[in-house]
Image (tube, rainbow, N blue to C red; front, side, top):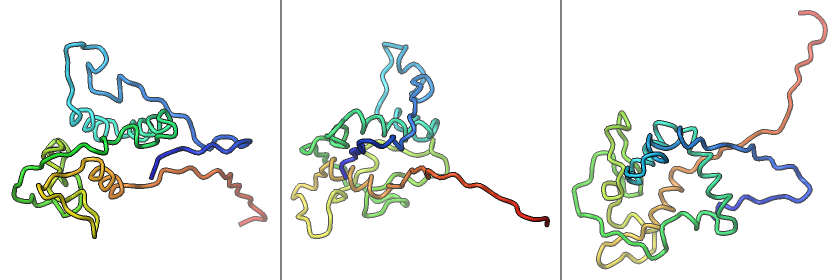
Length: 166
């Protein structure tokens, strides 16, 4: 899954351009308050839950801007690892990477330290890390594949023709 958007010479792009209004898509003060700091969790939560219509556009813009690197441009580095804390599994967790299942998103803790558990970066047959560390790139790819869905457009016009009387 490289995320490259392929252009077809001589064909009009099927992709509808989208716009990312920063004042809407990012937390208040993101661009204007030079003293404010925002965690990745805060930005993710704002885009994912407060302004979800921004997410697809931001991902498309990132993948398009990254060119041939595709998703590689914004996934964690291939050598980036996390030593997750050994803790009791929360009721919503499974063996695969997933985000918290909560009634209201405000109740969820979406920080990397809360959602990553040992061995969640492994596929069947892969050797586990002796120290229990998790490769964040592999974990992210597994998480993305879990939540993958298709956003598409259908380029057709339907015409309804009435013949005779009813």
